[in-house]
Image (cartoon, rainbow, N blue to C red; front, side, top):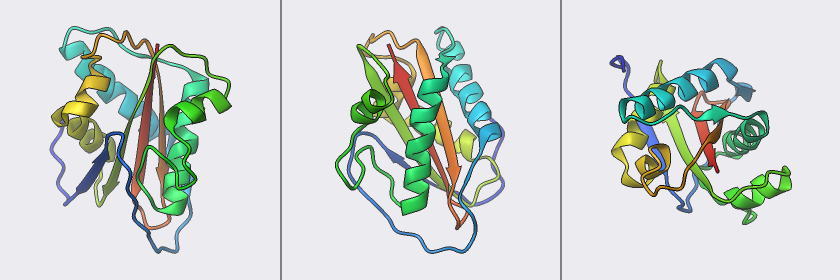
Length: 163
């Protein structure tokens, strides 16, 4: 991955509660190109480990995107929303049927390559790496990536994994 020339703050969450408020005056927006680059970087890591690429699914992308947007809109980083809704709840609400489901999250500030920082952070985090590289032998096949930029420029990334 190319070296990032700006200072960056990456915050990762792995099935943990937490939150942070932001104040800003920009607009909230989805970043589809960054979603594609995040998926490409994640699959590059998987290929490097001898694993097949995760296949994107539109319904999973929507689940991940909605959560990224919610976190960006309300300024938190957590698998569980302030109302208590978790990743499996969000998947079921979207009609996703699964035998195994996982989620990686990242929040990145002040970076020209947030997707690279997120994926490299996931690789360095044992819990996130287990999801990305399927180290539990769960057999994840499908994925969805959602990226949202908050009004203050902070990038929120969610990647979900499904078997």
